[in-house]
Length: 162
Image (cartoon, rainbow, N blue to C red; front, side, top):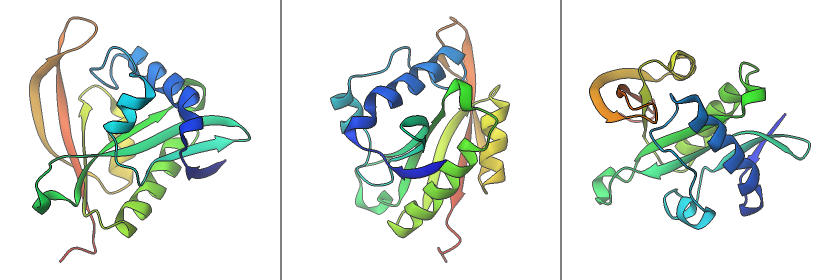
């Protein structure tokens, strides 16, 4: 497995994996994957990564800005998805580890996300990479299943910040 920068040519595989995440019902409130142009506009240009084995994309990660205010330029939201047939094989850990390294090199000081309360695998993965749970949003949105879901707010602060 290799971790490399994502390119626009990876989009069909990235989209496939995103749709597999959507299908779980506990990865995102989104119910469909956007077209590439919309996805591209919503994510920062740096720190877009894919895990690949040969030509096959196994998983991906990217960052989104959390605010347009300059004081929050170092606070970003993490998206991380692993293909259904690659889960439980260390792909997520490899991606998140590399994302942490690349994000710190790019000057980001806080990585954050909101994870479905019932997504135990994602919560454990993030904890293993130094994220901490900082809060719970109760019944924040209705999932594709028609039920209200809680999300757990997680973050990782760079130890380089004083």
